[in-house]
Amino acid sequence: MTDTETAVDRYLARLGRRYGPVVGGLAALALVVAAVAAQSGSSSRGQAVAGQAAAGAGGTTGAAAGGAGGGAGAGSPAGGSGADSGAGGAGGAGAGGTGSVAAPLGAGAAASGLARSGVACGSGVRQVPWTSYSPLCVPAFTGNNGGATSYGVTGDTINFSFRRTNSVEEKAAFAIAGSAAPGTDEQYLHDLQTYIGLLNKTYELYGRHVVIKPFTGQGDNLQEDQGQDLGGAQADAATAHDLGVFGDLTQSPALALSQPYAEDLALEHIVVIGGLGMPKSWHEQYAPYEYSVVPDGTTAGTAAVDGLCDRAVGLPAIFAGDATYQHQTRAFGLITPDNPVYMQLGDLIEKGLKACGAKVAQRVSYTINVANMSQQSVSVAARMKLAGVTTVLCACDPIFEIILSNTAHQQSYVPEWFVVPWLDPQGRQVDQTEWAHAISGEGTYPAKAGSEAYRVFKLADPGGEPAEKYYAVAYVQALYAFDVLQQAGPNLNPFTFQRGAFSLPRSLLGDFGIWSGGTEAFSPARTGQVGYWDPNAVSQMDGVKGAWISCENNQWFDISDPNSWGTPHTQPHCFGR
Image (cartoon, rainbow, N blue to C red; front, side, top):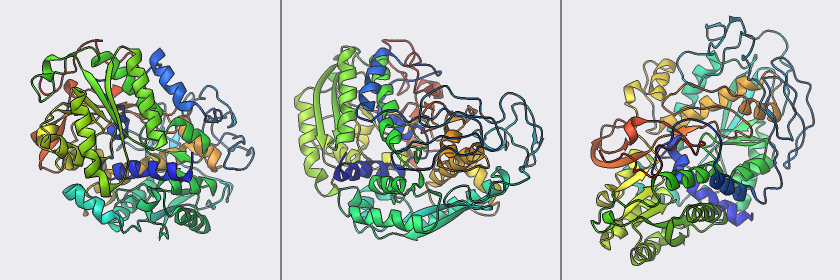
């Protein structure tokens, strides 16, 4: 993959981050119509999709996951140290080979003692009671943590960088997003620091605490995403390294993380939590440094094929706005950006659909360039309409969704839309006539007062309020980082961090579905929801009219189980049907 390809690739991901804290977010690259239920394996068509996504990855780097503090091996293309000694916790196999996942810390013989959070540890007890995603309880650590076990780690700190945005093009993109545009970097940092303050007090970091080191970079983050100013990304990664950081938490609603920057950080041996929609092969290539709270593109693409084949293919397009389409068997149109990674994802979906007998009537790609998206949308919509596409699968960034929907309306083209979800505020910027026929991988947003992200913020700052509207992005990012840090144990380095990620215990069901570790679990997300757009529903996110509403009675579905999509060859239950 060239620098230009990786840069353009990241533009889509970063625009998306500002809209979506929930794990259903980019899992909905899956573009699924249907719903999912419990975790298991992969179907033959799903395996074919995943196999193609992994092609050219140069092999699997996945570490067998051990408990916190177990030994880790060597072998990262980005460099790194060899085996470490492994202190405390359950043992684990070394990195560099696939294998079964060992028991997570706290499994088996129950740990006993009082945790830093005040919880009395025992069998099945979680570290903290206020999140569904807490790791299992660890008694308060005493003794020698090994001091500076890795670059960016001292005896009492774990340092993370945060790159502020520095783009002159951002205003143009945010203008199209309208009221869905995010707040400032400082607002986001305020919320992130608030969460980290509570997590530092209650999670077990073995005598250390997390410190955020923000800086304003030289690079233009949006130019990087268009294949320009790649030297700026490299310079900023070097700056992060010079700040003495172990990891980077730049993923934010304000788009400061680009794919070139993420890759340059990995080459500096800095752990990154922020990749979005990248294939599993990308995570393998940069292991043990790249992670994401949402599913990788390979998992999402596989889910797309399984879900569509089971619940959409061969059935009439009953959710279309055009009455003629409602009585026709679905003819699919597929839209992706034209950069290689997303073209590859499109190839996987197209081939998977054809393998189960679907009619793919039109395939179109577009260039991620805000300046000419309107012009491109005219051709895209016209080609879909001319080909008789009843059902548009739009693996699109949030800006192109807005523009394309308005163009389709102008051309009196009202198909079914199966789209990537970008939360309620973005949905209101899309043409409402069109989106009244849209389904995505996003369910009903939880009511603010009862949502986990808000409740935990009030625990951290009882008298305060979140500063940024997408504060849940900061919450899930910080929460995942601390989950993994606790699992990694006192002997913290990138390899034990990876093993910690792979050994996360299965969570309870919460606002973000279910999280767990597993072999090559570069993302913890295991489930998602399916929803439809209701222009008249009042959003629980912000009290404004226009919201995604869960299909299938608010059910959460397993994105990895091809057998869990409900009764085959039946329509999903959306739009009250």
